[in-house]
Length: 117
Length: 113
Image 1 (cartoon, rainbow over the protein chains, first blue to last red):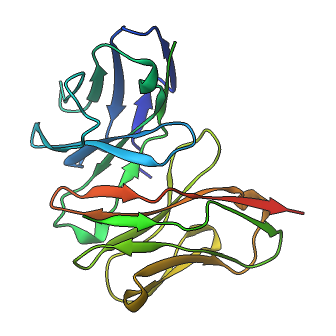
Image 2 (image 1 turned 60 degrees about the horizontal axis):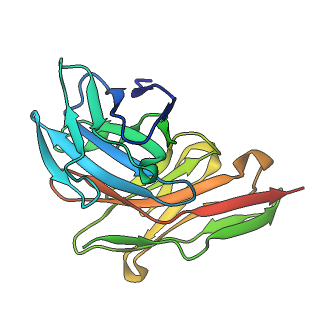
């Protein structure tokens, strides 16, 4: 079964440093997403991306965050200057066209645990 | 705005007992509903999904869920729980043209021998 692949599985970074979280969505999917789960809390939507631009973003997704699909296969989340409160599990997800209802439903990656120290 | 409520934060059941995890949603149109399971330190695995049609949905690992529009509920059930079912379970609703997922706060399931 196709998978969404996220790397690295765990990243430790110093406060103020930039991090890039990487994701390889399923190849024929068109919609891409990042979600975040702070330890012990619920999974929260960050951003959706379609047709090479952000389609929706949450209040969490402020100016320190950015997303990119640099080469048609990877989908990245960049945090410019990390803060302690950015420590969380970050999930990438993708889904096929909303018109293809039979295939509707997200596929999530296994997540990247980001620890900011 | 859409929302999902999981009223039970933590549930403990004995192995072999039946299980029901509650989920209530708030959404104006016909919802697309999901249940995900997350084992400690792991990602999110889709258990089952409801779009339309038959209101009783079968999923993986012996789980099922029933959509009840009149009660705005989508409760997850399993007739006989196994120790390996211990995990956190998230109910979710998809909405909007770009299919944003809104998750509930999760129910942590503990299974005792």
